[in-house]
Image (cartoon, rainbow, N blue to C red; front, top):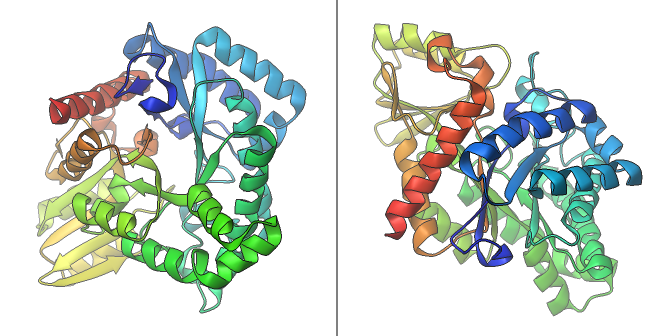
Length: 408
């Protein structure tokens, strides 16, 4: 749906949706079923009389299937019939994302691999086809932050940048051929090549927007140096995930200022919250063990005085605390419902989300807002006792309320 502008305002407003990665579905048939059922139900609750944007998540196999012209035509017709449109795609997880352990494999293939480039090229082509003739403004595809930190050798930044530049040329060609703009949004995440907004700013300045990268892009596209830099800055930016940034103890205004000072576009904000707890005692650690589930990584950042200590996954942090290193405050990468400021013994990073939305309401940072609580089906049972459609509708309502309060 469009907020910050009247119905039909298109790019003049901000598009708000949720990411369909909350619904299990790896094949195109499963994704299409989720759209015509779950997404349709959410629309009926939050935007019954208006067009509703879809934050589509496509696996590699689903993207290949949808890329067929007949499948695209059929899906476009179905979207029109349901009052839906697609403006953003989550291109982070290429393979299976629900029902079995993914952990660090969620980043593979990464931007060191040709398969990631091919997959993301397909996603951008699909998104442009779905946007054609619709008032969706620009499109965005969010993606992995380069690679998992364990694969980040000294040569990794240059290798990642090389493939990102190749993809940016694909995005430039889409714009030249169709007039449609699609952007690639690298999404900083704990324990990855790009962990923080500071990492992102440094990577863009040294490897994507540096003179050598601009010259290589100019050679690839035939643009002038000035035109190449303009195109690169238009087509490549970041996805600012509010859970990830809060887990890193960043502050909303500082994160935004850092990216803007580097001339990096915030192509999408993923509106999400994580867990927060102060110096855990035995009861808190016992309760936290119930969040240490086997499917996803739950990176932890612990503040101990002025130091930040990072753990790859929740069990490691719990073990360190029990060994006498509890720290002062914990932030846990476990996406929790936005509308809850506490879960049992734990607080959430909801204040960071509210702060970022205040900035968005005061002066739009992005035109793409996407609620993303993909961990719904692995939350401890007592925290997910409402149907998922109800939870998504409540999260969108909470987001709209925060934007409304900030803008009033």
